[in-house]
Amino acid sequence: MGAYDALKERILEYGALGARELQEMDAAREVFAEFKALLNDGSVRAAEKGEGGWRVNAWVKQGILLGMKLGRLEEGRVETGVEGSSFAFIDKDTWPLKSFSLESGVRIVPGGSSVRDGSYLAPSVVMMPPAYVNVGAYVDEGTMIDSHALVGSCAQVGKRVHLSAGVQVGGVLEPVGAVPVIIEDDVMVGGNCGIYEGTIVRERAVIGTGVILNGSTPVYDLARGTVHRRTEDSPLVIPEGAVVVAGSRSLKGAFADEHGLSIYTPVIIKYRDTRTDAATALEDALR
Ligand SMILES: CC(C)(COP(=O)(O)OP(=O)(O)OC[C@H]1O[C@@H](n2cnc3c(N)ncnc32)[C@H](O)[C@@H]1OP(=O)(O)O)[C@@H](O)C(=O)NCCC(=O)NCCS
Image (tube, rainbow, N blue to C red):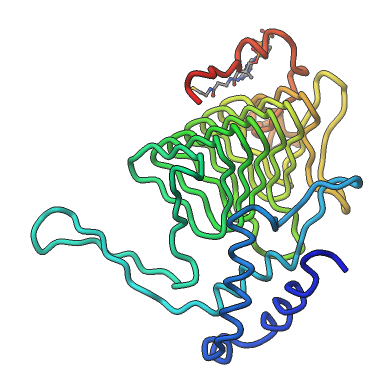
């Protein structure tokens, strides 16, 4: 029996019930509270790296969906400072915002950021405003989440990753069996990049400014003379240390020729070298 098998069984059992039935069941709320505490402290994760590579924990995603079904809409108000004026937030009561304390060791610079309950930010993570971390996301030590960045639901972000300003890391909650977006240790994601469903970025890769990746994007590897694609059994994998920049390729066919059409395509321009290290070096004092 795995450490969480009993919890997993109960999550699956309750997850099969309808929302109306669940909302009357205190026992389901208790199981959900136990599950959410484990998500919050990083003990359970939507995906984990083992010997055979990344494995999705579909039951964890099912637990998150259970929280959605169980939840009742609740109104929260923030005073604007103007007499008689407040702003309302409305969400499921099972997913409030996450609370932090100094002991959490996370630095969240003030100014419009939110971290949803049921996500994990390791000590030493820094979050610049505004940024958003959604449910089920896991962000490991030393990672910087810069302004206007999104860490979508269930995204798994490694150690010492730099998510630059405007980076969008997509959320993959459904289908429950789908691998969430994974960004491994020491990856640098440049400004305005979008890393969406069906993508794994391996250690030390550098994603140049403005690159968009998803599982349907072929990535042309100029350095190794190959094309990286998603397969039936694997998401798109950006190899370790690859330096990916935004490129284009011409389209074939009479119509494309006539109009000179080309299509956006990410290109691996090279593998990380001392120049790249210098261009992406992080400043300890900012952390
Ligand atoms: C990828 C990046 C790190 C450059 O890496 P690098 O190892 O220093 O790359 P180099 O300068 O050695 O360039 C290698 C080749 O790729 C090209 N190149 C580099 N970056 C490129 C980019 N983003 N787009 C297109 N081509 C690029 C260079 O012109 C060079 O080609 P050439 O040899 O034909 O001239 C940089 O382009 C980048 O995107 N940095 C992220 C910046 C950012 O968003 N910061 C966020 C905080 S502000």
